[in-house]
Amino acid sequence: MDRIIKTIAITYCIISSGILLYGAMPDSLEGILFTLVISLLMISPQYLLYRLFKRHGKKIFREIILFLQVIISAVGIWGYYDTSFVHIDAQGALIFIFLPIYQIMTIILAWLLLAIVNFFLKKSR
Image (cartoon, rainbow, N blue to C red; front, top):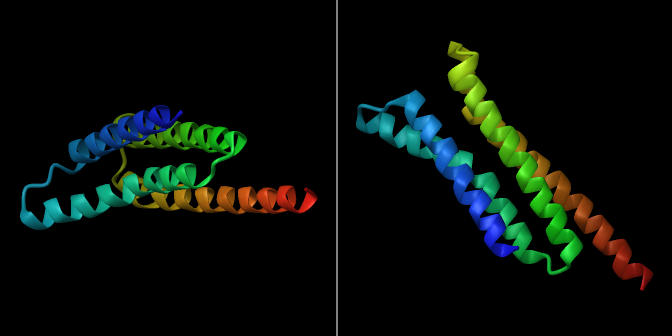
């Protein structure tokens, strides 16, 4: 299951960074650095999910995290693709900033729910 989560994360990072580079086409040092910062923001949800996956040893929690990663990755790639190729708009570039923030908030909410469930499972034993 570890290889699956790594493969999904790497695929998401390559596709989303490729779409960002296609849309940004940086031509100066400042543009390259800004694109790098945005790219790091875009891949940070995948890193958080991987750390959360490594932290929990129970199989059911790992399956929930894997499911969450598939959903977050699919929505992310669809959002980037839709904004960059289908519904092209000047304000569409804001998705590269706000979508990772929403993904991180979703991961934090899922982490809190997993922590609450884990607390009650330990308490009931």
